[in-house]
Amino acid sequence: MTSAVSGEPTHAWAVERPGPIGTGPLTRVRRRPPDPGPGDLLLRVEACGVCRTDLHLAEGDLAPRRPSTVPGHEIVGRVVATGDAVDSFRAGDRAGGAWLRGTCGKCRYCRAGRENLCPWSTYTGWDEDGGFADLALVPAAFAYPLPEDRDAAPLAPLLCAGIIGYRSLRRAALPEGGRLGIYGFGASAHLAAQVALAEGATVHVLTRSARARELALSLGAASAGDAYGRPPEPLDSAILFAPVGDLVPVALEALDRSGTLAVAGIHLTDIPSLNYQRHLFQERDLRSVTSNTRQDGREFLALADRIGIEVTVSPYPMDRADQALGDLAADRVNGAAVLVPG
Image (cartoon, rainbow, N blue to C red):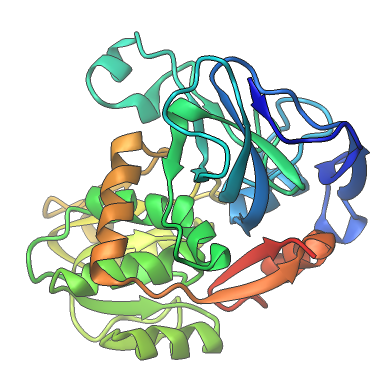
């Protein structure tokens, strides 16, 4: 094992008692540096994105899988130590850790290239500690090499918001030159929109945030209206990023014949009753999105570099992670919230 870490305790944020964000579920803690296993990278965190999944974990919408978990799965860092079996990274390299942390590699889903559905999959910041910390462990097999010449903060949201947005866009089956509706316009949506626009789509954004509507128009959206409003034309595809089940029938009604709605979130409030004739007839499809594959990650990161994707970032010092989650809960974040050291 190569190492450049002292044994001094480091700082992290942990979910001690899940509950409403106003109750302070995130607590600042001190811990000894983690030791890399044979296949691990130990990263000194340069930036970590704040994802709505982190908020779901803190508030208990996602049941914790271990006590006192450190959230954060959009990790940009420098390798300071490697396990003995690692030969793909070395000390000093920049690497990224994402949501998908491990799979069995043997089940029928893994063998079919659908590792996102592996029953034994594990996740950063849920099954194991994540990047709301000075140091983070990432399995080398699930890490991504990242550009050396970019600021760390705009890279962080690419590692979950970007990858999940990309998979959601593919699940929405948008035809070439099609009309795409995006419901909710936060970190993931503003990246997926740019991919769709670069591929020739017409994009209509529907969101309750006036600032988000302004951002959507500045990025090239054809229209931006209220989440419960109607887009100016029927949609070929739609993606629901807002975790609001009430918007499912709204989005389905906005679809043209044979349109597809993809629901992007890991958590969604209850969906109201659907009317078959109004919402699903004429071969409209309703699809969920579950995590991502590493191939999704590789494809998206290459595409983001090629089209020069713009990441709108709201930076927070690492010691204000609780405020970042509170602002996310209150829809006060424009683009993506990112924690940075210092």
